[in-house]
Image (tube, rainbow, N blue to C red; front, side):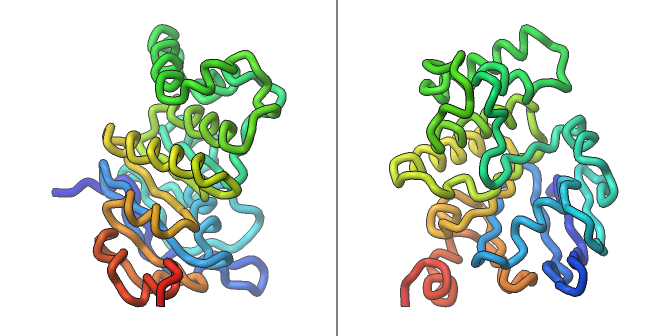
Length: 241
């Protein structure tokens, strides 16, 4: 029997009179890489913020279950303790801290010092560019390097669920390929991932399953590779008529 790590039921989110999310159902099973694709303003980031308890003042209805527990009203810092990690849109690194200090912040709920050091070595081996610059301030890194750091920092938490919000945004094509290579590597290691991404082709190529979101609604879901061949998806999100 598949084990739900995340299950969203009937989620509605309204900012004042604007209904951003209109009653969606979504689930991510253990070990899956699931992607949520859609145009700008579809409600994808709002959905991630609802999961992580980082929404501004708004009305939220419906249920969000993480590892079998209802978390709709749980504070974000409590979710970090439950090994739910997010790499936000725009990366959100601590710019006045070094790379090494940023990684240690990712492990602030842990006290297993030897294992923390082993994890730092592990992610430095995945991101050798970060190792070379370990004492450099994060704010002086390029966008791609900051994205690598944000991902490594989140992975220091040993997440049961890793949320990635637009990891390729604003990056060069070479860096986008590198970031997706890491996403696939992390997924292959068994980390459960929910990926929000505008580069629909790369997202679908990396994912097991996919959801399409449009104007606050889930309009399609299914096997990611099959969606790559779906004429409606190709026309709307892959730029092919």
